[in-house]
Length: 224
Image (cartoon, rainbow, N blue to C red):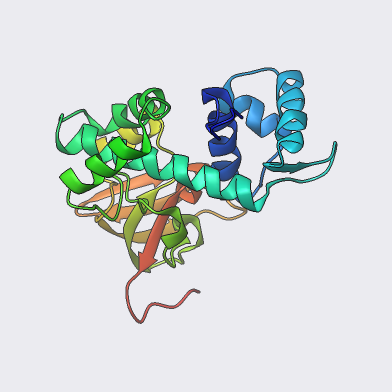
């Protein structure tokens, strides 16, 4: 951390990755961080020690990894900036949705708080990024995973947790984007694939992909 309180791009990437993994059922692990950031586990361990010294992360080897209050605040700032940039890219520059996340990752470290505010104002203070996630991460709404929706139940896609180009492109081709309504036709046993009806088409989703799609069930629907 510099004297002005600014964080290096590497530190920002780690804080954002820890925050995002913390939203997943498996939580944050050194292996998960290494895979997400594309680095060696040994590099993750070293950075976690550094972040702990900066009082941004709580870390003890072989124990849970979590953000401190300051680390959480910083991570949420980065996530907000990232999501605003995604909105700018898709809404103004017409960048394909599948490319927005990667481009925002490159740009987020160069945008100042002042420019971030200009972007928000220019866009009319948007409430969600193009993947459906709230701009202000503290405003996460009450949703559930598609994998938790019961047979025969109807739900509307709210957001996509996995914003990678490959996954977004796959879902886009199948009409499975935020705002789309679907119905669960079949859930294979033992945590297997899920078949959903989207319009007239039936789509089969693996359990991991289904768990990354956040939805809201239709009013009056109950789990079975």
